[in-house]
Length: 227
Figure 1 (cartoon, helix red, strand yellow):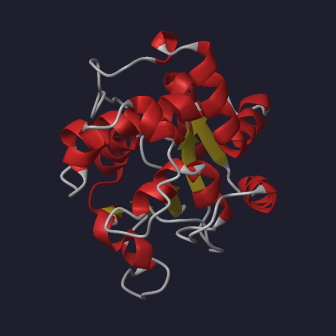
Figure 2 (figure 1 turned 45 degrees about the vertical axis):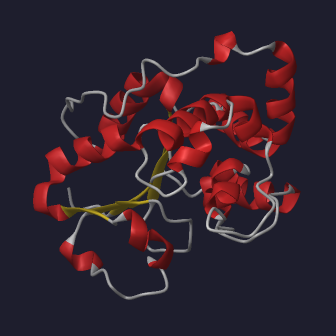
């Protein structure tokens, strides 16, 4: 338990389940950065790494002496979960606005206006690449340069899990870090949300193109011997 880790929590990638597991195992040696403070995680010296073994948060990748762990998810399923969360359970001020948008409108929108809802652009625009590349909240679209950087950064991760293979990922995680078999439940499970299998092929194709960098990152992890 002496190895210090950073859990880069990408929204809607099973992070609530993972944080409960880590908290249960590490106890007081685990810390979760509050969502409102994640953006300032690297710019403020507010966290003493000596006090914790694992820190989780919705931060972005930055160089650190501590290794990172993270989970990725099929980009369309991640957006489906995000749309449902924002429109049904999120306490954010734009909940009612998102509830009026169909999933297609949500997934294909560029959210181009600078307003109270700026951050929706970051959540929807290839957010897995955006965070792992270290790009963060830069108001422009993710591109090839960010994908390349994200792939290089992932080479430094001792562990990357996939939500679609969650149990297999967790068991590999346990062996890698010498943990006992961890028990976990499913937190923020959304049984009533729209499922990808119900989407028309035309929409799947359009979203796949729009999320092409996240799909490239996801495929790169899928093709590696992570599991």
